[in-house]
Amino acid sequence: MTKVRKIVVITGASSGLGTELAKEAVSSDYSVVLIARRVERLEQIKKEIETSPDSVRIYQADVTDRTALSALFTEIGRVDVLINNAGVGYFAWAHEMKPEETAQMINVNVMGLINCSELVMPQMIERKSGHIINIASQAGKLATPKSAVYAATKHAVLGYTNSIRMELGRSNVRVTAINPGPIATPFFDKADPEGTYVKNASKLMLDPADVSKKTIAVIGQPVREVNIPKWMAVGSFIHSLFPGTVERMGRKAFFQK
Image (cartoon, rainbow, N blue to C red; front, side, top):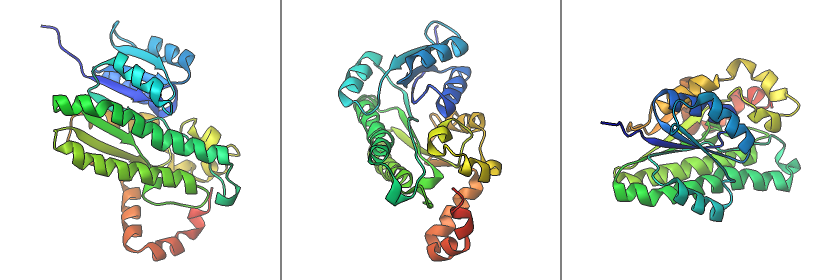
């Protein structure tokens, strides 16, 4: 009897963590659907990781285009797991942030995630099974200077995730937030073009392969959130209890962007 593999949809799959998630999912015997704007990059990834004709499907799409996404998810069909990974960031002082960069972060990080989630929820609720995994950030728990808008979008992601977790739980649909610290990916090519933050935080940079392993491992599991590394979660928890003290003591470190 042929085994029916779970279908895992990954947004923002053309580079960085998205690509590592695709690799890990295929190696874990899931059938993956990769979504990104750079279709030529998706085609290359497909050639590198596919193990059978139905192991990898690719689609070119912009997660901010709700109309196109609706048609796309209709074509995809069943979605067992949605990993909302698409995201963008820019580091700058709040009063110097470019309006177009602010809009892009809000549209991609928040509206894109909501668009994809809303489009798969009905089928998951009907089947009474499924899993939505949202790639959030430690920035969503502890905001720091020069990341006001980015942190705001990740705060929004966590708020949305926490709410739909309770809503969808009634239908046996799981929802998990992944909260990584800085990951060594091309994300920082845009976020930190001068390399200041990457240089200062080099010892804190996470291996995207490790983050992807921890993410794929929670599929189907009743896991509320995954914090990577764990010590950062401890820091954000302490901040929630003693915000003034943490911000005063950590002031030098927080201004290293």
